[in-house]
Structure formats: structure tokens, C-alpha cells
Image 1 (cartoon, rainbow, N blue to C red):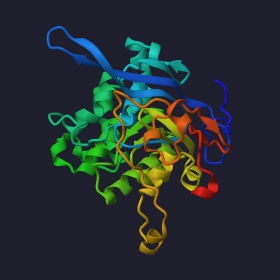
Image 2 (image 1 turned 180 degrees about the vertical axis):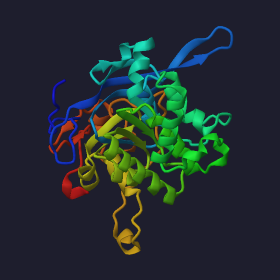
Image 3 (image 1 turned 30 degrees about the vertical axis):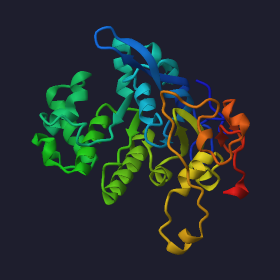
Image 4 (image 1 turned 30 degrees about the horizontal axis):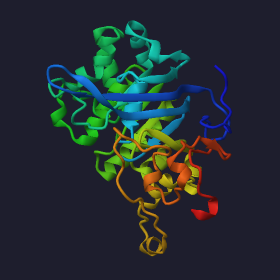
Length: 348
């Protein structure tokens, strides 16, 4: 597999700026869900354009943050990567293998190396299964070790995520939300995966518990050389955990850049609006800020706007924006933006 140059659009780089080989390559990913009409004789009357022409790469050991408003297609993108949703079109290459062409045993074997931590810690755990069965289920499915070895592995995993190894015989309802999310993380770690998709793993937790969970994810990444696709709608959370950030709007990636660069110099008007909505905990500084808040509602994904999908809400939109789709262009430092009239550094 070729090495990706960090200065190219969509490329991945580590914290020192050196180029790294991509573990995951997503190209022109499209996912549309059919809208059915009729009871007995059903027919397709339209489609929900959940993901439209999404491309990015994730380097080994890197964290890519995927952010945007609810309904922008973040979770669908993650589920398409795992093949929980089969893409309508596009390419997903993981560890050098094209996932969209894999089926059956071939796909199951590769799934050992990619796991997910779900958003809701209350819905993602089977209430009728003990913690030991939940965490050990991936080991049983993939026939890893003997029964006694699997029990020992479960106790080890609970210790790794900060839970008492003696909790194996308890049920999910006996734990708090933060503890349940740790159980979900232990399950994701069971097969020693290379990639973990974190689907808003802290959005349902209290702020203090969020910090603990984020610190745990960061320490595990260093210890186990994990790669994260971190999906979230909270940009302040993503800032602290991501090496690079991709911003999605209505099924499209509109901007992607190294984390510090994106927060210091947002170029897409949508990214600028998202950052402007984050309050600053200093009243004096907050009063002096110039707010450029987003207006209007997100258009329906069943009938997305022509041209740039953001143009109906954009304060910089001109006639060309409603007629043509802006290409993703690189402005240097690994910063790429899909906008005809991007913001300049002095405008931020």
C-alpha cells in the first residue's frame, strides 16, 4: 500500500506531520435509503440521500473526528464502513481489502479488526445477558480460545476499562451510564481490533463522566495502537481527541483539516457557524465575540438543494453556489474545503 503524503487533500498524518499509510480509505461513498409507498404492492417513490460522495482516509494510530449536525450522515457513514449498511456505491478499503465486495466468512474474518462503540449505553447492551457474556460474545463468535481462556480474557478486559473484574455475573441494569459505556468499550476491545468507530460515545453521559471516558479512550489508543473514527456533534469534544477533523453537512464532507488548523482557521461558512455556536466560558470574551449564527433549518435529505447543499443557509452564497457543486480544494497544511467562496484567515 502506498504512503499518503500529508500535504495532499484527504491525506492522513501523525502529530509530528510525517506521512503515514492509510488503514482505511473511503472513496466516493454513497448511501441512499429507498422510500416505499403502498401496503400490499409497494413501490419506490424516492430516496433519502443519507451519504453523498464522501471521501477520506484514516492513518494507522490516528483519530479522525467526523462532526456535523444531527441527520448529516455521520452514523450512516460509520455503519457503511462496518458493512452494517451496504453502500449504494463507492469504495471502502480497509487493511488493503475492498469491503464492499466481501461477503460471508471473508467479511466476518476482517471484522475482527474493526469494531464499534455505540451511542446509547442503555440500548446497546442486551439486558438479559450478563456482563461476562456480553464482553465474551465476540470471542465466542470467532471461536477464540477455550471457555476458561475466554473467561480470563473477559476479566482482563474489564480491568483494562476500569471496572471490577468480579462484575462478570452482573446485568447491565446494575450499572450507571458511564459504566455501561465502559462495558461496550470492553466488548469492542475483545478481539484486539485495529479500528474502532466511536459513534458519539460520550453524548449520553454527564460532563464529568465524559472527561473520564475520553481520557480512557486516549490512553487505550496509546497502549494498544488503536485507530479511531470519532463521530460526534460536539466540536469542543472532538477538538481534544482528534488529530484531524472532517465536517459533514447533509451527507457531504465540506471541510477536512488537522484539528488545530480547523479550529484556528475554519474556511467553510458552515464550520465557522458551528464554531461560533460554541460558548466561551468567559463572559467578557463572550460579549466581545462577533456571532455569525446559522439561519434556517437543514433541508430534507429526500430532496437536497442543487449545487452546494449549504447555499440556502450560507451568508456568503452567490448564484454559482446554487448551480454547481463546489470541488474539494486543498489550501495547504492538509486543509481542504468544498466552497467557492471560502473564508480567509482575517475573516475568522
